[in-house]
Length: 124
Image (cartoon, rainbow, N blue to C red; front, side):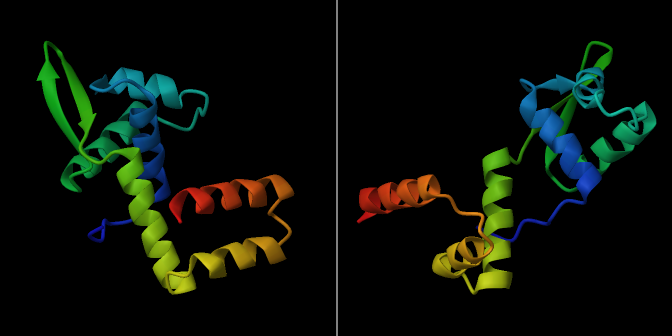
């Protein structure tokens, strides 16, 4: 797809919280999802939400007294873009190169290989 900007980690965490919820999602709901991790101050979350709106990842509207957020970019769209950029940068878009690196690193189980074979057979 067209080159989507890579998100800084903190903004990506906010997006993951939005995707995990059922949008539209309020600031409080986002903070609740993030709450297992106590380092999030409401002001920080608001600042990051504004940045995500500026980047066209989120849109927001006021509903009553609350502001709610809806993703413009889906998790699938973002992950696809990230993966394409990663593959292009590191593997010259070679899936075989990626799998080979994983395999050499010992990270590929026989189960993974069977799943890959299955995936390939469905595409040929």
